[in-house]
Every structure is written in C-alpha cells, then in structure tokens.
Length: 200
Image 1 (tube, rainbow, N blue to C red):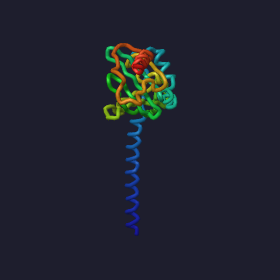
Image 2: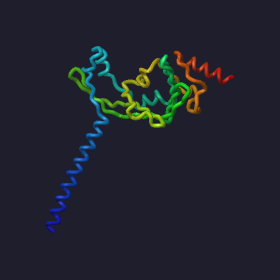
Image 3: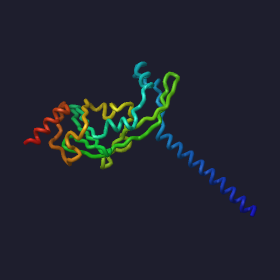
Image 4: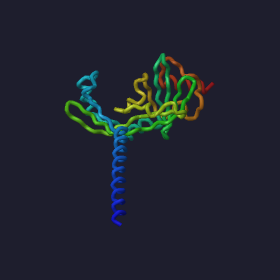
C-alpha cells in the first residue's frame, strides 16, 4: 500500500509540474498576443506636445469602433494609384470596389492591453487592432492596425470620404456598375455618376 501511495504522490507531483509548465507557456503566448508596450519617448519624429497628447488620450472602445464602421460607406481617393469604395455592413462583412471588381471579406477587432511609457510615467489601456481578411484568404490577420482613433481606419491611403448606408449597393452586387475612375473624385461625384447610369 505504501508503494502505491508513493507512486501516486510522485504521479501527482509530475502531473502538477506539467500543468504549471503548460499554464506558464499558455500565459506567455497569450501575453505575447494580447499585450504590448509603447515607449513614447522613442517616437523621435514626434514633438513633445504630440507625445504628451498621445500618452494622455484614450483608445476608442469596441462600441465606438463598431458605431463608426457598421453600415458605412468609405471612399478613398488616391490618384493616380486609383480610388476605392468600401462598404461595411452590420454583420462585419466588407465590400471593396476597386477598378472593375468588388472583393468581399470580413473584419474583426483584436484586443490588446497597451502599456504606454512616457517621461518616467506609465499607463495601461485596452485597445483594439482592426483587421481585414478577404474571403479568398489573401488578406490575413497580419493586415491589422492598432487604432489610436477611429479616424485611423483606412487612413493613410488617400483622401477619405464617409457616409452611412450602402450608398452604391455594393452588398447586392457581384460586379460594379462601371470601372472605378482613377482621377480624384468625391463621394457625391461618384453618387451622381452611378445615379445617371441607373437612369439610362
């Protein structure tokens, strides 16, 4: 009986040790994927005022991001590279009209705990990374951007125009009404052009 008890104790110790090892590995992987540190002091190109402002501001909440995106059309005008129109529906799908195609995909938010360090001080905040993936898998989770504000969504790709609703019925189409022009264009100009085409 004593041998059996000794065996069970050793087995329990080994099992407990393995559990803690796997738990530690899991915690490390989780932390690596959901935690980041930003040393604002190292943002060399930023002015002191911009660093202070960034350190003090809060990140947009999930509700604010969803309120900004759901049932929304965004036009990005970037000649001569071209223009794109995105529609984000209420089910986290998006439709991208570029050239003579409408590509479809989905988007999601990835949570992070962000520790910001500046001038000897630090703070922790919950932030979200905005990610897009096409239905054919050609865009992956790596196509993500950590959002300091909702204005960062699709920012940096050209002039941005924003409106609520599926302005160009992208969710109902497999192909666009015409090839997207490459000249500078606004949402209203594109709306007029599609309206004229529908009347023909």
